[in-house]
Image 1 (cartoon, rainbow, N blue to C red):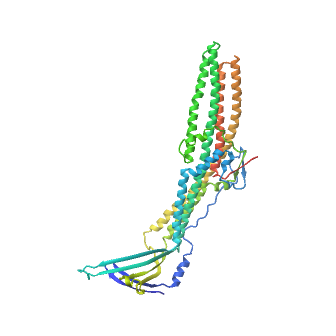
Image 2: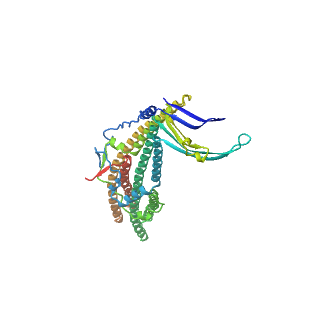
Image 3: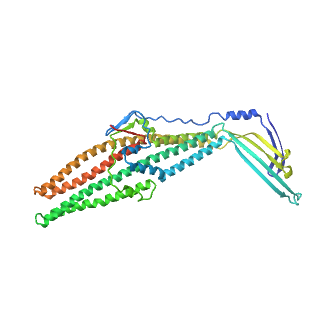
Length: 490
C-alpha cells in the first residue's frame, strides 16, 4: 500500500532523519476525509419541551387582557408612559451603564473563543528556518567549522472522525449565546430599574407636595389658635396640639427629601454618571406617570419563551450537552494528516539544489489504550453538569411562572387599593374642612380637627405611594414577562 525510505544519523538520543520520503495511498487519505463527516459521538441536544398552561392561574384584572399573538416589541415599552425624560434616561442607560458594557465585553470574549474553536476545521501550518555555524571539538571531532541551513513547513490536520471538534464548537457557540442572553437579561433589568427609580422619584415628589400642602394648612391652624389664645378666647391645650401636629408633619419632609436625593443619585449611577449629575434635570416636580387603560399579555408559553433567563438556561443546557460529546470523543482514536516540506543543506551554495529538498506526508493515529478508566470517569463527571443544567432549566421555568403570577396579582390588587384610597382621601378632605368649620363655630373641640388633619396627611401620603406602586407593578410585570408586551387604548 505504501512505502517509505529515510536517511539520517544516530546519536545518543536516537535516529534523526536528514530527509524523509513518504508515499501514502490516496485511497486511505480519501477514506479518512470521508469518515470525518460521520455523526459526532455524545447526545444530540434537543430543546426541552416548554410545559405551560393555556391560561394564567391568576385572574386578569385592572386592564390586563390576553393576546393570542406573542408580543414581540421589546424595544420601547416605556413609551406607554409618554414621558420624554423617562425615555431619555433609559436610552442613556443603554449607552452608559457599566454593567451593560461589561456584558458586551463578555460577549466579545465568547465570540473570540468561538472563533478559536472554529479554527479546528482547518489545518495548522508552521514554518521553521535555521542558519547555524558550528565547530566540533578537536578532542572528540575534526575540529573543523561547518554550516547548517534549514527551512521548512510542517502541516497537521485533525480529522474529526468522532466529532470531538464539532462538539467543542457547539459548546463554544452555546456559551456565546448564553452570554448574549445574559446581556439581554441585564438590559431588561436595567430598563426596568431605571423606570422603577424614576417612578419612585416622582412618587417622592408627589408625597412632598402633599406634605407641604398639609404643612401650610396646619401652620395656618396653629397661628389661628395662637392668636385666639393670646386674645383669651381659647385655652392653651389647642395651641400645643396644633403645634405638635405641625412639627410632626414638618419632620416628615427631610425624610422625603433624603429619599428623593438618594433616588436621583441612583438614577445617575444607572445611566453611567456620577451622583448628582441628574439633579438639575429631575428638579422639576412632575406627576407620577400613569398606566394605559389596557395591557395585553401573551399566553404563558409565548411569555415564558421571551424571558432571557429561560433562554439562557436553555443555552446552558445545550453547552453542557455538547461538552459530554467532547469528553466522549476521548474514548476514540484521533486521526491526523501530517505533512512536511523543506530545504536542508550544509552550505549556502547547495541550499537551493534539488538534492536539498525533503518532504513527507501521511496519516497519523493516536489512541489511549489504558488510562485506568479516567476518560470514562470524565464522561460521567461531565454528564452531571448536564443533568444540573436540566434541573436549572426546570427551576427557571417555575421561578418565571411564580414571578409573573405574583406580578399579575400585585398589579391588579394595588389598583383596587388605590381606588379605595382615592375615596378615603376625598372623605378625609371633607372631614378636615367640616371639623375646622365646626371648631371655629365653637361646636366641637380641637381634637376633632387634630384627628381630621392627621388622617388627611396619612391618606394623601398613602395615595401618592399607591399611585406610584400601580405604575411600578406594571413595570415589574413587564420585567417578569421579559419585555415584549403591548398596550392598547380603549
